[in-house]
Image 1 (cartoon, one colour):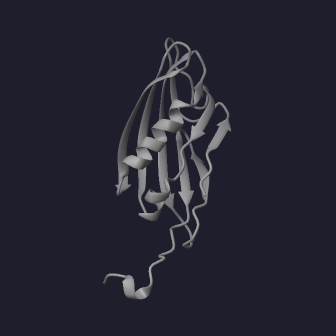
Image 2 (cartoon, helix red, strand yellow; image 1 turned 180 degrees about the vertical axis):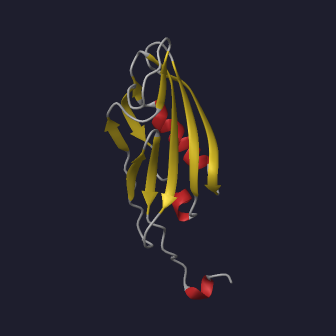
Length: 144
């Protein structure tokens, strides 16, 4: 079962203010992190996405642009999950934009259950990491 992660922090991103440049981690009040969508996990999709977030004067998300890079089967399901998570995140009012990197990767031994961990990589990347799914097909059902 997947759980949504909400992190309260001055979090990820190369963030911009109208008149001054702010350092990473300064403008996000609450960041909702995306889930590894079950179908994408079962399909072993791994991808990295660049996410550009435009904010209004009140720090409300007005636009989210997502571009896939370094992907093995980049998924619109994961893009939708990122968009939904970012749209409910909270940003400080002095910020006008944020640029983040979101990655989905499979690491470790295979598992029958989807369990995720979150990794932060400086300066602006957060990763959703899961064990690869165990192949549940019977040997006679597998294709060569």
